Picture 1 (cartoon, rainbow, N blue to C red):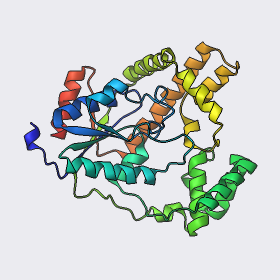
Picture 2 (cartoon, rainbow, N blue to C red):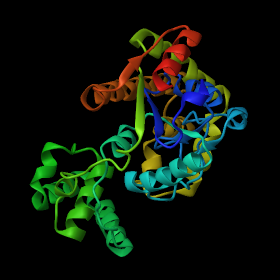
Picture 3 (tube, rainbow, N blue to C red):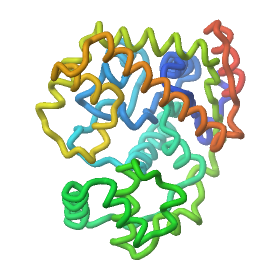
Picture 4 (cartoon, one colour):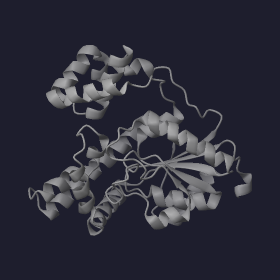
Length: 311
């Protein structure tokens, strides 16, 4: 089957909600079609978190070549644009080696960057970025959001009042370039128009997904995810950095402080994970209408469906 593949033009994207089985599917597919896996999950990039982000295990990493997992410090700011730049390099490396790049993850913005492109926003001066984050820390998200709306009213329609990361990004872009981030993004196109892009979304039923989330959360605790959070908290990183948003960090922090019990903590993480999965599914309906939605409870049947769509 692999001799039918066009190595110079093929790109496989596998998306789906958290706990839908994307990683397992990607590994089997990579082995079958001579592919390599590139991470498209914004939380699996961090060195300090493997259990809590459900990063591929050390044994999985040995089965096929993986890229962009666990390479970044939680102390670092990391944008979608920076991810895209690294992903492009990895895609080109795969093509040179006659390997099929398989991007797998749950971060919709990353997949949008591949399929729809990104605006060419000039790099933000590090001193300006630092001063903006100091201001945010001083006045808080609520007041800072009002400052953003004052200088960029268009942000109100798109950015939630509680979305710290996007608020900061929109503010720094407007301050640095004098243009709204949404002006920058209005005329974008994919850099992969000459690729045959196979887009797969794992459309797992709600009941199955909830079972998977329950199993995975309980497994995290057996695998000592509390130690990851304990070590993370010792670093005392800026609270505007994305690693703080990893599901479980806040809940386990409260557990370690004695505010919540273990059972309640596990239940809270399950609830937040279900909420996140719901948002991912909502995103897919709005932004992935042309993707092939596939699922079967029987893994071998699902794998055959995906293989048929990607070869």
